[in-house]
Image (cartoon, rainbow, N blue to C red; front, side):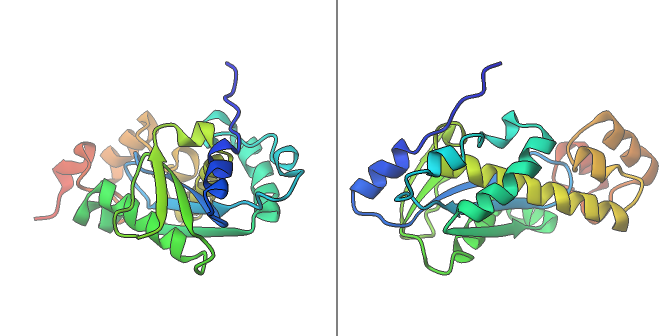
Length: 211
């Protein structure tokens, strides 16, 4: 399969409209049964002529292997003007729902940029709580280099978190499946029941909902 190549056309359009610091936003973990949602915001130096060459291998994280993503993370961090991260805990997902929790994580990621942002490019999700100019559309992580970069940052950081959480909650296989719904995960739930990391509002876990 040919891997879609993101570019900077959307970023340049916003720059030409007068925006200086444009953050691409994406998330990881939205569909998992367990663990947090992680969002990342990445501001790239659009005036740097060699930026496309520096980030030539950046793609939507779903199109990359774990090794490729881990190799690209320091490349992105070194190239970016700013990188922000935000999290929403499993309890927040259960309390307010996955879409509001995803927005909350994204807002936290933008806040981590310390105000050095004046426009957003977002995969799918709009952030009505924030007054910054924003464009949100499907497959932004395939089309926009800053959003693709954010997808890698969010995915690698969340995967690293799930590997660490395996130490606190052994037996579920979090280091392998990262909280997603695999056969291994389902079998572990049958043996152990849910952990504090599990989203009890998810259909496969609703039998364990607390009364």
